[in-house]
Image (cartoon, rainbow, N blue to C red; front, side):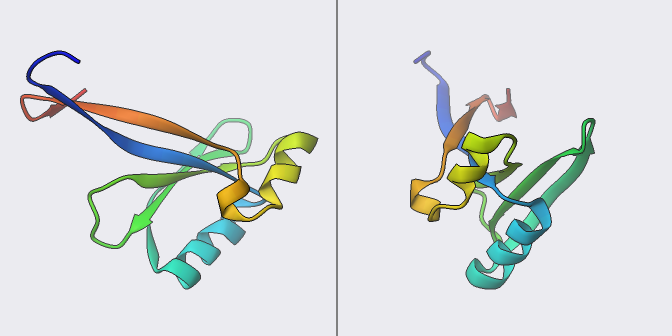
Length: 95
């Protein structure tokens, strides 16, 4: 790691069966807030949720595409597929 730079996990991706169903579940069961919901091409969305008032890592919800991902989205959250994104902070500027 370069001196003067620190890294932190910004997003962890969770594969879900359906965006709106997952948004409702994370709101109702965990009290998360919807931070971003942006439409992308190909019926995809950039959906970010996190604990209310938190500035820590958040969840990026990714709708399942294909048989293997759909099967993964049917499992308990601890068993689901996930990916992480890191954000590097340097001199107060997010890179």
